[in-house]
Image 1 (cartoon, rainbow, N blue to C red):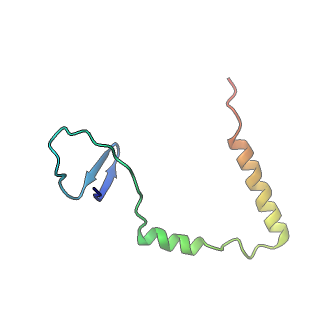
Image 2: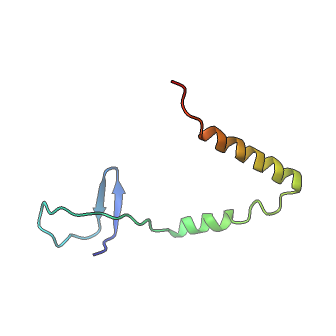
Length: 77
């Protein structure tokens, strides 16, 4: 069975009623639907770094690497 719905905090509100008795236990699998807005934003961002000159690309990659190392640090207790 597949139903469309909207997430609202810990609740998923379905567009239609389920054909199940009240209290039936179910397993839920989530698949995100990509909206036209998401697709448009993806297309706008695609390739945006392709025209960087070598110095800019190097600086970008160094900044990205520093951030990734920072995210992997363990908290000090």
